[in-house]
Image 1 (cartoon, rainbow, N blue to C red):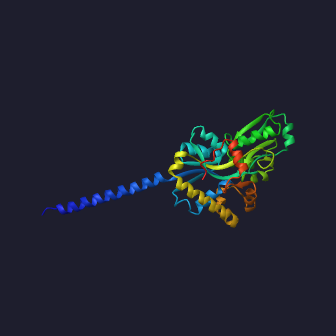
Image 2 (cartoon, one colour):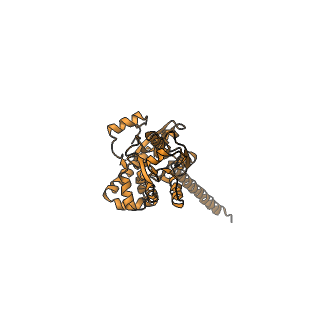
Image 3 (tube, rainbow, N blue to C red):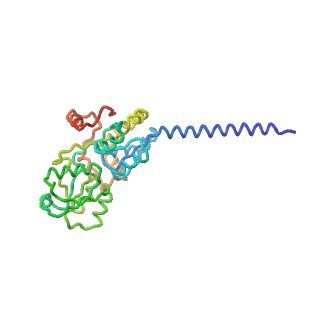
Length: 304
């Protein structure tokens, strides 16, 4: 007898299997295209993102958060790996917006109020008296350079010669731990890396809390077309950040234990000290801050 029915069954089965695979791949493809990929770096002001990730709040939003140590590496990966958004100060925003004119800030995190600093193993007076080149460790092409330039101007160090060592903060800390510095050395850093440097005899000479006349804010940036496509996800992320900050207020120890792997804090006490060096910007911006941002030509119209 002919076996046509069997062949028909096999044909139907094959068709259904092909359809199932196609639908599955299509579903995966849609999920991939809808995913929002964000780059960030290790900074206490971005810790609400780390907390939200660890709590699983980003998965329902289809948001993938990746983090690195270096500010420079953060920007490099954002640009070269075609990520959708990145965190950073307004300095990094200005740098990237030269190549992406439609870049906009969408979520504000914090304002540095002592979190960015210049440290040294000698006094300011000793630096001012130096006649030989001074070693400076910092991340070039980031806010570190802006902070150092302001430090030079504020303390009449323009006539000094500096040997720049371009390293990320972890490499700076590792270098300081592994070497003995007998010569005057300057380090431009930020929380939480300053605590390890303090243990090696480096003291803060200036910071964004005192004699550095600098406005340093941290935000999340994305091109305008990405904001329009992923607006609901950005809104959900903003809500997750607010939710994380509420936990920080009510359970700082639990919050710290959750975000500790992403930071370089040696203790809960160091973490709490770092919190005094930033001002959270989760609520409406104050009129004086809006005025300063406007003077700095920092666009705020698209902030969520």
